Length: 166
Image 1: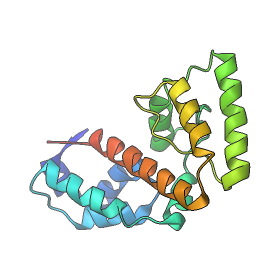
Image 2 (image 1 turned 135 degrees about the horizontal axis):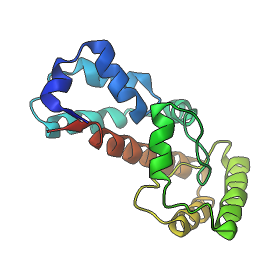
Image 3 (image 1 turned 120 degrees about the vertical axis):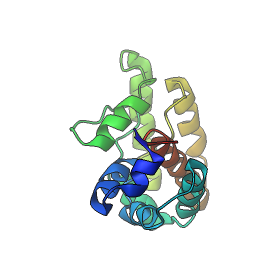
Image 4 (image 1 turned 45 degrees about the vertical axis):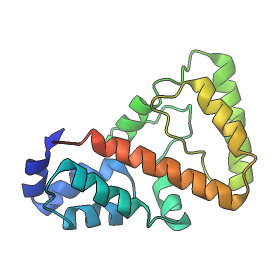
């Protein structure tokens, strides 16, 4: 974690490197870095939230390239993979029935919507995630794009909270 005043003074390349694990949408990080200096952490988060409102289906597709299936522990040493492992900590892979239900739900979701199921896992139990997955399978395509984008916004801002302190 880095203090806001340090973030404001980082060279552009270093600031971008710091933000990249928050979301795999480079334009978001670029715009946030270009908006420096921020007078407060609140001002940074207002700007970050406003930038997420610009996202559309293309941005969602771009971001999902870095997201594992829910219930599957991401491999790799990248910072985003490490964050995903932490965020999905509540999905107990020792619960075979839950793991199987998530695999089946993921397959149904991918067949239905053509992309991985995205949900903010942090703070949710595996059972809550499974219920949300089943509920979202009932969404229309447009509803699901909105729901997935909202989840992406939540994930991104939660990750940003873990990067920048006051």
